Each structure stands twice: as structure tokens, then as C-alpha cells.
Length: 484
Image 1 (cartoon, helix red, strand yellow):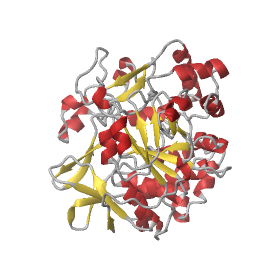
Image 2 (spheres, one colour):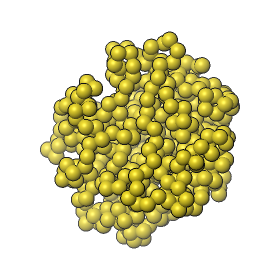
Image 3 (tube, one colour):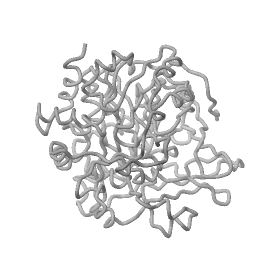
Image 4 (tube, helix red, strand yellow):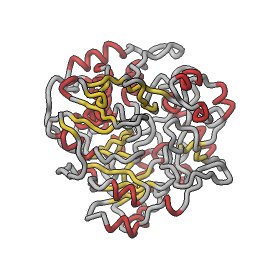
């Protein structure tokens, strides 16, 4: 087993870094394989799949019948045929399950100690580990079909327990670029390097404890063998120069401003503005003079309201832009069509986004589009039963030598019994279940939650140009229409 160390850079596949436009890897399933495929097929932008919660996404697509057969087709290309067959046998429902029936659950994450080392853990359920690997393989495999252009995958570093098998699965499918933010992913370059050399890894794991923990992943435990793989390029997503300086072993950067959608970096100031949102200031912005001193020729991309500003980004020295919200509301987005249409109409009527400092169980601020009938509404939140049955945004904590999970969005008695502070539960929302409903894969009766960037003027312009069903190609044309 190889232990990750910091500071070395290996040779990477840089095909994905030659584009001037990167499609954001949004939400759980909002950037699905069919959006990334459409974007990459065009050739002008890098299509990116979201790597968040893909085990649940794939399992539920199968339970809804996998009508076009693409998921099963990709599973048949998965190197371990036994794993693929077991997944299909367990989750596939011919013709799709009845709407009111419950989904077959994906195993909840549990961690076991490895050997005699009390600070080293691994996923206890190897079927879950195999499902994670296969789901990431499937998503990238499908995104790469029908063209020969690069494809990327986006992960949240904050969600660490599934990260290693997820990355491995995407590399099995030949992903070209890995984009990782929501944390400081210093170990990822070495993870990619060692997977490419057919090694297992041990990486740092965030656990609420007075001692440090690590998590191990050995591909041989699931795949039965080691394989040498192509190392993808690695883009670190950062907000300011101190994070970039700490994240030196990358192939490039995405600089994401606090107006970008989804999770934002916490503000340096702990105070809130007059709207109750985090009070971002100058210290939260990138100091480009200091940042560029450390670039050493590496590319960087600007994100957050740049869909109509490619030339501005290029003139400032950036290699290009990353854009999300304009793709989140296009036809090929994974968002439910009816919900997408409703939100677009509200955007055209002046609707907007609130940066909620409390909603996400992760503790990171989270952009929430304000819309009645969704989890942006307090009345809807009050009706929603508290639960934690997905486990992606859980806090890992140590109890009597074991690493366990708790979540401030679970029932209060359970959270407090596990040592959680009841005050930390105020305002929390189960994003895992809400985001699954946003893409039409939620449990019956669970309301969706919609995230987008604060700057929605480019979305309005696209609707004015092409209507409420504008396409991914419309977005790419819009980005490049005035570009040099």
C-alpha cells in the first residue's frame, strides 16, 4: 500500500487543459453524462460530469428502467464483469419501478479499522466500493462516447469517504481532467499518480478527533487486479491566492468567485450582511499579483459569471473560463424539465439566489434559488422529515476508537445522542435528498432544492435569444460569439 506524500508532480494527460471554456460539473446529476457528451462533442469546450453521489444516481437510473439502455451498456464494458452483473441484478427494474414505490437503497457508508492501526480506516462494504467505482466508470464512459474529445469529472474534496474509489472508477474509463474543490486537495496529485501506476493509496481523512486519521483504498480488493492507467490532468478549484499557494502540485487552477453556484468557500469574516448572507470582503478575493508569481506557466480559468466575458478573462491572462449556471438550465441539463422551466420563468421575472450560510450540513455556504415549492421555502422545510440516509455530507467523528457518522440534518435526538451540538442543526437542510429530487431521482414526496450562481443575466439573455428550451450548443455559441 502506498502512502500519499505532498509536493511531487507527475506527468499528466493535458488534453483537457487546451480548451478556453470548461462546462461546470454541477450538483448531483445536474451535469450528467449526456450534457458533458454534448459539450465535448462540439469540440470548443471541455464537457465535465459531476462526480457527486454517482452510486445513488446510477442505481436509481437503473430502477427507473434505464429506458435507452445506456447505463447497462456501459456496465457491460466495466472491467469486472461480476461486479457489473451484481449491480444490474440488484438495481435494474425492467420497465421502471412504480412512481410511489421506494427506491432500493444504496448501502450507507460505514468505516472499518485496517489491521492494528487505530488511525487507518477503509470502507467496510466492498459492494458499496464496487458500486462507486462502477458508477464513476459508467458516467465517464458514456460522456466519452461518440467523439474523440476530452472529458472531465468534478469532485467535492469535502466528501472524502467515497473519493478514492470514485477517482479510480473515472480513471478506469479514461477521464482526461479531474477538477476538485470544496477543500484543499493537496493529496490528489499523488493519488492520481499512484493509481496510474497500478497502486493502492492511503490518504488523509477529516475526522472530528484529537488525532489524525487516514483512509485506504486498494483497487485489487474490488477489481481483483492492479491496472496501470492514464493519469488525468488535475485542476484545483480555489478562491484566493493562499489556497492556491498551499495547492502547488496541480496542473492548473479554476479560480471560483463567491458568486458561483453550489457550495462556496466560507467567508473570512464570520459576520453576515444585511440579507443574512456571508459577508465576503477583499480578503476573500484572489490577489492576482501574488497568485501569478507562483503560476510557473500553469493555466488558470476564471469562474463565476463569466459566460459572456471570455475575452475579458483572456485579456486578464487567464487561459479561459468555467461556466455553470447557463448549462444548469439548458435542455441537456439533468434538472427535471418541469422544474427547470419553472425556475427559468422565475429568473425572467427577476427571481434570484440567496447564499444560505446554514443550509448545507457541510458547514459551507450554499447558493439556493428562491422558489416556492422547493426547499428554499421554510414552510416546505418544516414539512420535510429530518433524515440522513445517503451519507454524502456526513461528519466523521471518533467514538471509542471507531470512526462513525453523524449529520446535522438528521433527527435531533439521533444527532445529539452521537455527541453533536443541537445548535449546529439550526437551518440545516438534507441536501442529499433534495438534490436527488432536483434531477428526478428523489424519494416520493421529497421536495427539490435548486442551486445557481448569483449572476443570472447570461441565463436571461439565452432565454431571450432561444426560448425556455435553449440547448448546450446555444450556450457554447453564446460564449464564443464575440470571442477573439
